[in-house]
Image (cartoon, rainbow, N blue to C red):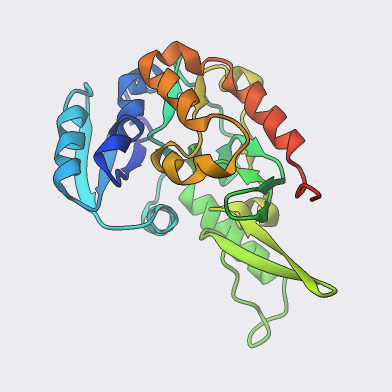
Length: 258
């Protein structure tokens, strides 16, 4: 059986429906015959429109409803599943069939470097992105246990959160710098993972933050909303986004000096 692809769909308001359903347009290019499990977040009037578009996806598609948060949704999948699966964001565009050869890692994805994140005003820590990620839940649980076991036994062993988002403060004299460990960043730092290859990156693009771009856009130094609108108009405008995004990360590695 093909490894299933799980997608959490969150649409806060009708204006963001294009971001919440963008992946539907090319999903079967990237994963032509994989089972698809769509979880529609917080059922409402808008979610009915999402379901109508979801029905247009051919093949084995399951639609379910749940009120949750993205990192909690991933945590539950890892704790409940026994076989490897994929998670995919709704603002992903596929241009080719996505192929992957697992190397035994618990997680696989696109590596995002450290950078200063202007919306949260935090130092964003390196991780494998969850925009498109393969997760082996059994290997994940084993890797997490092995890392915990490297510390002294109970009652001295710390509780370690590998999945959920975390903000960790660092005191520097009279000031404080906050490190943002986004979803699964702690897992990457604890036991690593498999980075996607350049060939894999050529198979898809990711808009970044599209389902809440209205909140983030005022804090970034480029026209995020305009760039996203261009992709909704023509998905070919999403080609070759990775080099631009990696350049932005390099140019924003540290908090700007005022």
